[in-house]
Image 1 (tube, rainbow, N blue to C red):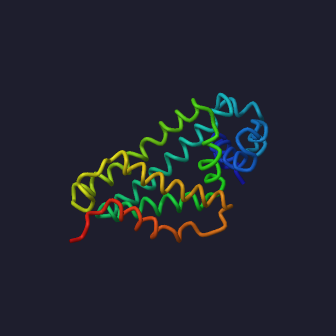
Image 2: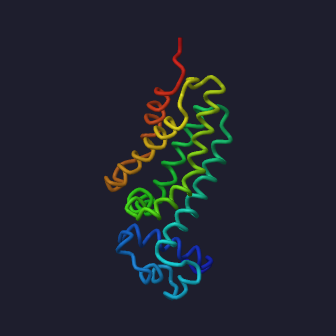
Image 3: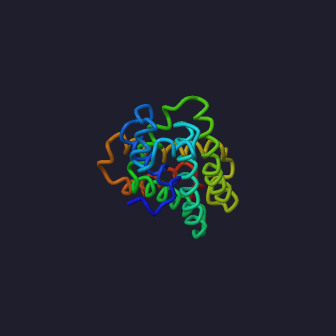
Length: 196
């Protein structure tokens, strides 16, 4: 039951579920309201429109997502361990919430240009976490010193993101978490200092 949650969070949680099941364009505000157990008008007390619900939902969920990742990687000693933890947390958080995975991997990407700009702003702090891991790896001599940070960030994020998208496209039928060590190994292979 969702009755003990503030209506704002009920609406966001309902939006994740409704958009995952019906697609963004097939998710009317009335469907979200019904799933949240609120009147249609209540939605407009918190959100301007359906696009606002989508961006706010992404901000809320991504904020929690980044917080958990930062908290977990800060407990690791070196950059390669932090990279492993980042991959693990990314896969874990989305594999635990199939509806959120569908929304982030498929529905957000079909949104209009302005919406995508908003989403990119929300994503920026996550990309900075990746940058910090790369910088630390370079400074501590674990990673190659001549790495182009923006390129390596795209390689890391792009790989992790594509692995989750592929998992969603295959209807989450396999264990995403089993791929963590392989993805980590492949990424490290491209950026680690060669052992002499």
